[in-house]
Length: 510
Image (cartoon, rainbow, N blue to C red; front, side):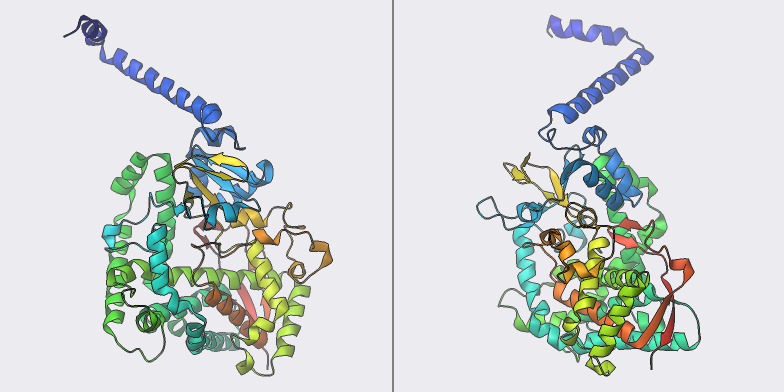
């Protein structure tokens, strides 16, 4: 053994436990300070604007995520620091005019589309396959090709009677409730309706019966809990994989673990039942996937397991949020509601005239929906940010090194005065050629994302939102009750907005 090694070790052998502990603490502090200084001033992301505390540690932004406040925090940071902000040691948020192209576009000649961050995603072993939200670029493209027939124009036309059936059932339930004179939580009814629609389209039957029984199905409640769990997983993993391990090992309640087991088993059973059923009596997603996909491109059972929850939740919660939020904003702006009411009731002579095609002519209602999604985006955060690939990339003039996480946050974009005049105001006219808003940067309004990983069901989602609102406005005079005047205030966001009751009084229009 070398004399140098012996000379180095001897002081430690003579040291007491307290002295060794003190040395360990000092070394840890020295390493922490060194890391903090490096992150703040010498890291490749150091030139990107942002608060130094966020550059030093992932804890501040993770805390906002855990509190359900991250959309508000990103909006605040972009307002202060500009179109690109460093929000963590290795994380950047973008809100610039070229961001969608730079991050979410096909990136021809630049290595192809950036892949989604899947570090804390559901593991493949759970279902035997990955879903679209966790898949890499190539696998995502393959799954999308397999699902495309279910979201074609032909499929939407043939699925329209199913969609209309559930929306009409919602209207009838609301008529029954209004006849009793009771206040109605209209947000619940929009959620029940959209979940029933997507449940039938995915599983081939009315599996949830939310509207019929006027209550949430347990499967849906657990889905929403999954969203919250996903944000906790993301935040804790960013702080430290050890923090995530400790949380999962010691702090997840047994009741939640039992609910996960129930949810998993129910999902597998529903998928097995649908795939064993050859005919459902009406067109659903699977009927188009099976009948119109190319040879060798039909979804496997494992892929359906992995994608079923995504298809239900992504196609329902966002639509319900858009419909309820648009209705609320119309109600607190009486002149806008009066204009929407005149448009709807002068366009249609009977409720049967309200169809997927005819609602596209409601220019003011369509503008009101777009304005609502600008102010209060249903997908407010980049819950699956992109991971920068080999060699790094340039975004909005800044070099982003390989391995960095980077995302676009719609809540922040829609709130920035530099892109939208009177950004905090609800002004549907901005989408109808009003000269006051001619300089708005409409290209940054991308509520369904953009590029090859954008929302697959945007056509269906837009149609459902328009029809739900048109039917509500046609059938009822709607009064917002005082307890819901501040409905948007302090909503928490865990991928989805956690919304309080939206209480209204309905008066049927005869």
